[in-house]
Length: 363
Image 1 (cartoon, rainbow, N blue to C red):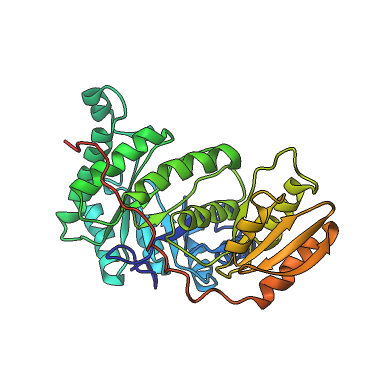
Image 2 (cartoon, rainbow, N blue to C red):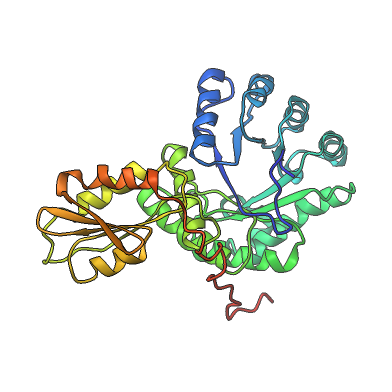
């Protein structure tokens, strides 16, 4: 349990993000955590880098609508202070905080309060001896690094552990998580670290995280983008919904367009996406541009738009209900979204999903 969020053991995959704001700037930090929660983040991490940041944690925890994770490097005292402030999880590598006495002190602070610890391995900061042994960052080196940190916790009888093995290289990230799933009994937090800007980072994260999730591996996810972290949450939701692991938002189906178009399909689809982004209702909306596939796709969706010459036909589950001018299409569609209830006959999430075993050998 991370606060009130179950992780692993068949629980649904949780969405995580991280604040850009320091806890020291407490007002903006509280506001940012609230925005992330409103966007759909279920766990939020914040950097705790000195005593002043640690001293502000309790106020942030008390004002957070979701469980908070304290991100700590090297300083065991900050981990203890974060635990005392009421955080729901520690992100800390025990091999980096000193001797066994310091590890024991952190473990006791976490165990007494039911706080899990995430061991986070990053391909860009592997131990020197592992780089010398393997020659470069490899999946085996990353898993070995994680094993070392995990064993320090297990030696203290602590097993409330989450593991992450992140890389900015998608193939390495995939290989590391596949190997970790074979080696560890603990929940895995998935991510492509330092993925980049929203365009490239979302693609890399979708490929990496999506591949692993499709194989039935992973328990929490974070999409790491050089952007407002709310964008991370939107991308994470889209990944989960594209794999049918969630069904709580508007799913938009839109054709790519061609020379037959008689409406501005691209602008129309973008406006539909933007104006439905924060609507939490599991409906499918098809935005189609012409009479070839438009009416058919529109009929299959909960709500469909089939474009014509300067106008659009609106469908609700196969029935044409309205014809509206092009500049009124989106407003009319939003009215229908308010009126239409989710289809009770639609299969539940996961029914049509495929979990496969790829052709790889973890040895």
